[in-house]
Image 1 (cartoon, helix red, strand yellow):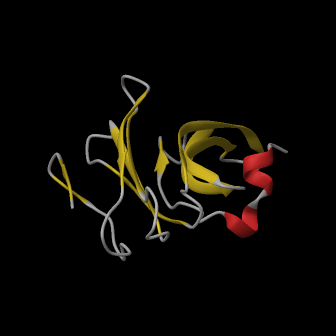
Image 2 (cartoon, helix red, strand yellow; image 1 turned 45 degrees about the vertical axis):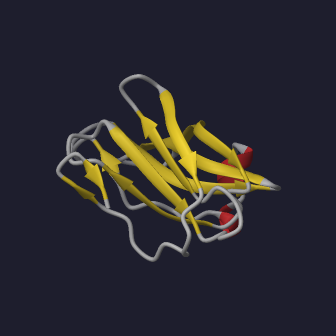
Length: 122
């Protein structure tokens, strides 16, 4: 198993899947922590068997140590994830189409929800 997925005790497992249930595989996005770093990652899952494929780190930030929530934009292009760590970078935005981190920042308060409204993160 990939080291990021093996850290299940530290992972806030996501609830987003791209693709339909009739597809052979689907991609699941999640937040993770690994030592003093963490971020957003994706793993493929065989829908019929539940077999896990390879996971891939999409975005990483130092201090993203208490993974919390993740949101996928309505068009599926953007991911945003938050960590409950208040003293360091606790927000990561990722562009799936361009395959790049849009930015990280430190929110003043511990985020308790994350969502997209149209094309804006709220």
